[in-house]
Length: 291
Image (cartoon, rainbow, N blue to C red; front, side, top):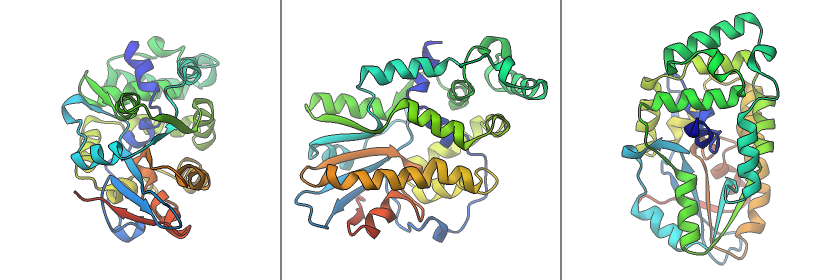
């Protein structure tokens, strides 16, 4: 179960990885016509540029890449901001506790839900409900997501950025905590919705997600994630819109005097309430870095 704990470090990957083969909507719905994983933040009185990068959180080692433009931006940064500060030992402890459910699954799920979950586990992970009964649904989804990647050797973007930060002796901060992220997920999805998402996690869909990521197509990734078949309005507000607005309220103080490298899930970048659009509305110049 070592890999299960590793997966929960990047728990939000389960919410992006669970995208099914939704039909792409028009690009205008994303409110971001440009596509790049890396963006430069300037203007609005800033004396130094800061950078915004969209991650996929977890990816097979053979698909992992970190372009020269990203390495250059990171080298010019003085601080790293992640969704969660995973260099904090307390966060790691909370993450490990989070993998274990407050109650066993056979106590919180009804017979029909247990049956569906058992079938999904057998079909996707070669496991049964008894083997994960003590874990939370979030942890189970992380495990199924890992299996859907079809590999055993993973790279975690947040961990790689943390290694670079420590090497460059720059401070690491986080927008949220493990506990707050779990609370967000609990408030955004019902158990039925979580199980339905589990059923949509396939190797084919994961492969398409990785292709979109390698092509730096944040608009397509966003449009698929917020497709009405995948995410209702309440869930979209809880998982993306409200969190993005909270982060953008925090960012001005962080980037005021320092060059900061911000790395969050790629789905947070695009959209009307995406970080790019919100920063622009706040008076900043946010441009894609293509090379």
